[in-house]
Image 1 (cartoon, rainbow, N blue to C red):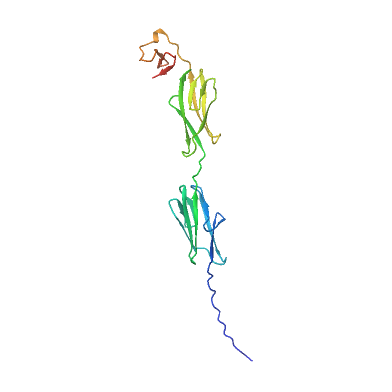
Image 2: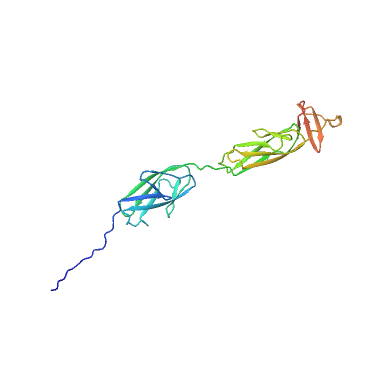
Length: 231
């Protein structure tokens, strides 16, 4: 006894995805959730379809609400370009699925890296003052510094960068950033002895000064307080 049975094998029907899940650097983010990424930082996006047997590659479109704030590369890397807020939309190319996310971009905090200390002159007489300034880089780092002198018996400095000569010698003026104590800048100042005024060196003085002194090739104007200024 023989019989025949016709069997028709239909090709597998495509599985319709019901959900798309987003991961940012491996961390799951719920639909409607918030992604926080610091200015200038980047993050890798990966995706998962549910059910799990739906292929993902080339099945996702990702768009930024403002590509000048947040960029998206072809390999799904997002990069925060400027501080602010925007949004990210993830769409499925297999089904009518869409997910959106808020994106918050905090401003990047820069730590001081270098300090440069400058002054108009590096030699003064005992009793004179000069003002030095500190330039901190990068530009967006805090420029707050603490001033100090390597030898306060030779020269002192206040927290406004005003250096005062005390006695003959050499001292190093140091600017240390408040945020990173190992980041410092230095400026060397030499203190010379104030010249004695003798009658044969006194010339006609401009108003407000007591005498003129020629010393080591420079002309010093002395006022009634015994302060010296060279020109």
